[in-house]
Image (cartoon, rainbow, N blue to C red; front, top):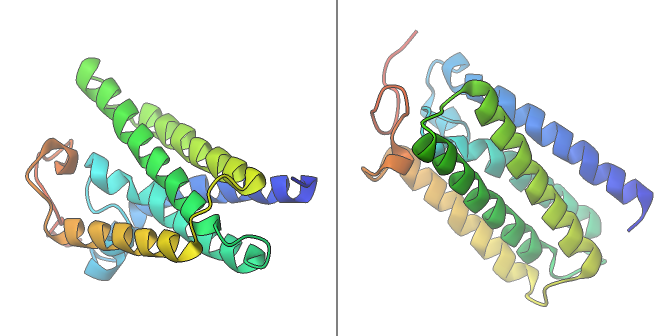
Length: 179
């Protein structure tokens, strides 16, 4: 892998972490717009925090696909596996910290976000440079669409399980109050 491509991954990681950090306030700044809520956390549940990992990475994956599609026909599937691992890692670490240790602190949550975003980008870079998968981009694209639809449905109709429960208000789903 070229040094320039490594820089692209590093800068993309940094931009994703930064955008993910600021995504927390976009929903409130939009006066609780349902459209904005599709792409940004609408509450402090673990599920909604995953949007800060998924959507910046999705944009990166789309851009990477268009810039490299002549070189690889399997990049989207590898990118999907990387984000799936990042999501599972985020849930595992967060549940361990919150459940086992009873800690729910903003700085720790930011650290978890950075670790999981970094892991996702590292895996993506590894899969990209080693041509790990032989599964075509069509399947990767369909899996990304499926995950996007799952995020959309669960934004408006979250299951009543702890993964979807706001850690502060103990409620589920959209915040209905206005500024």
